[in-house]
Image 1: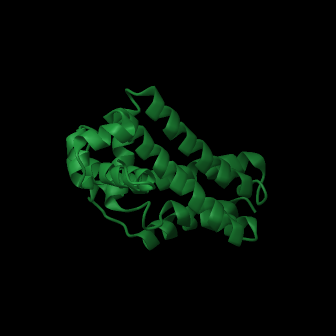
Image 2: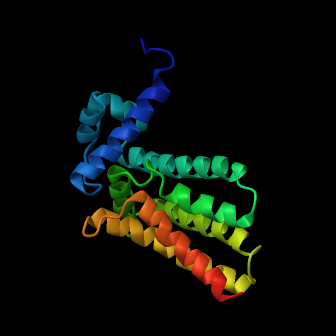
Length: 194
């Protein structure tokens, strides 16, 4: 007989294990057995909760997006001005759990998978639209709409680019330096239109 209340805990453990397994393999070529082993459960139990590896990987993307959204919404409540809100969006993008090596590896693997999987591509489009929307909503209060769109695209590209650099470990940049580079870009762009 299943233990009451264990399903959410096991599902989260499997999603966390999927992140670790993806990071270890450097791709989505992990198996349910690999993920189950990381979670300390049987492959049968992993299949019971998710049905297939693909469903578990989709839930892993959803989990990353949900966490990013929740953290952003929470942090935005404390910010007062449009500029403070821009800083919040940037800071949340680089916070420790989002900028962790296993999370970065998972994001990159999902970007590669998006070339083959419409569902994965759809989730990554949601991420890109949310990031752009959060940046644009506050930039429009600070500058003309055309400049706001250009700055939002540049800041989003910089955030994504810093993730790629971090994953390559060719020039690892810490969280504060990544935030600083992105903040400097936004500040310089805003000064350039005054």
